[in-house]
Amino acid sequence: MRIDLITKEYPPFIYGGAGVHVAELVRVLRKQIDVKVHCFGEDRNETDTFAYRHSAEFEAVNGALQTMATDLSMVSAIAGADLVHSHTWYANFAGQVAGTLHGIPHLITAHSLEPLRPWKEQQLGGGYRLSSWVERTAYEGATGIIAVSDGMRQDILRAYPQLDPQKVAVVHNGIDLDAFQAADNPDLVRANGVNPDQRSVVFVGRITMQKGLPYLLKAARELPADVQLVICAGAPDTPQILQEVTDLVAELRKVRDNVIWVEKHLSRAELIAMLSAATVFACPSIYEPLGIVNLEAMACGTPVVATATGGIPEVVAHNETGLLVPIEQLMDGSGKPLDEGKFVADFAAALNEMLDHPKIAEFGAAGRRRVEQHFSWDSIAAETIGVYEKAINGKHIG
Image 1 (spheres, helix red, strand yellow):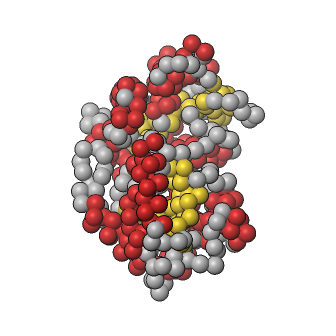
Image 2: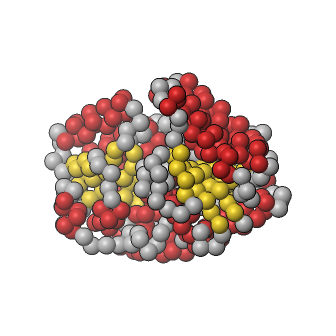
Image 3: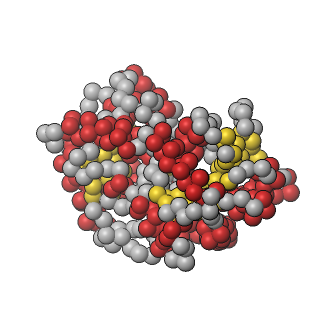
């Protein structure tokens, strides 16, 4: 079995959860089957891994067109594969064209959905309309779709109601259990401006509307005075959301002197050190198909307070590995809370409850057990190969 996997992100150039997913999945799949990777950007020094860039004539055009041009440059090389597997809309166009040209199944892993990120139209204009067209066309034409959570599967079927539910399967994201485990590294924590000897609430994520960082910054006004708020956040989607976060941090620092904003991209060692030192990990997302970062925190033995949305409730077990904060959301695709004040207050209350919970250590230990039992990459790779076999043999995958 030869699988050709298409992705925008691939090591060493990873900036989001989809890239982490692809890197870990390929690592484990290659122990069992033949996998060729087609990715964007700089050449990689890895066997059976090929990188592509758009040609010079596309340098000054819309970014979505550059993506499509890069996709087309991959298609010929996929000849001979038994199945092509694409990740995110950036790769879906290449997957659909390759599948059609070469007469092979095209499988998509859905990490997010363009209809559920409508704010991107303000950012990208026609580029968002193109990305939405690419995604919809690929989903409609694909042999099958893997959702990274049951919540994501439901979102796919709502966003694209014409799809046959039998071609949408669920295979969760995973976690590298050897790499992600509690590590006491106080010097590395201090090097990032955090006092490892004091309590902390830690956030890790990109500065984008879906990650909900502004809600956390508002909720943090209610944290105990001794608790550090540590924001490991960069890669803003737009200047506007960066300005909003900057203003909220400035306002919070007027009443708290222990707000630490780490803007750089953390190395894996730094991330593990920060998660291990955290008292509570905060995930205020308003859109999250699964949330790998919650798995990473739980693997490090840190309890999680997270929004009860998307696939998060399939990761964080309420009152066992953390606390889930309820949210009523607008149904316009934005996911914004219907009552922002209530959501912020509820999130603050959950953080404070967890910070002072008499059994907080048990929550952390339960989180580690949960990821070991349900989210190992070995089990997820086995499930994925099972989906490949069904797709290649013309069977329903869902």
